[in-house]
Length: 257
Image 1 (cartoon, helix red, strand yellow):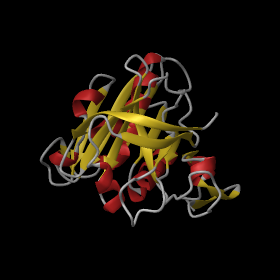
Image 2: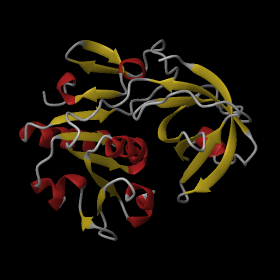
Image 3: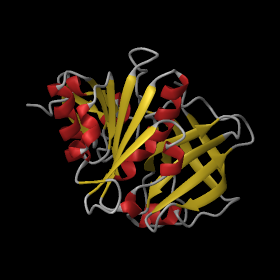
């Protein structure tokens, strides 16, 4: 897909928690096509110590409103600066980058979308696309506590939502891989979140012989496969997550070895 460098206008800034902010961006022209699982590299202006762009997953694309949504976890100076943006400000973005999730195996497939922390972000757009394809979508979302579960009202629009929290403040207590919904059968699993969680999901999928894709969150810098800082060992050798991923079928990864 063709890559674009665009100065997008901030239409709205919504704080989802004390650590997460949702940026709704737009342009005076129709936004380019973007797929679930792809990401954006954003330039952080006004932060002297932030030299590199920051990779942000595409949370949602609304073609009718001509909006791109980015969920930002404010964990460092650069991302905290993004939380200071105001409606009307401009955010320079390179998009769309990487390879997204593949379509479901069949229109009526039962798809399980497993996310943890800010890794839930790309699953919202994926859930909408799968629902439009006629799939039966189940979200399995985990967090440390109830305050870490984001956009639940929006996820409910596109499928059944199951949640876990480590402290038991919402849903079932424990990790996503302990949730009771896993006794059901699924045709496809998609996952994004902390690596230990995704590896556990991959083990479950392998044991049940379910096709599974994972969106990796390796540290990225350039977003184009030039700097080699996001390399992942795969069955095909070392691959750049930003260019060859971030979505990989788990059969390509060496997680089970």
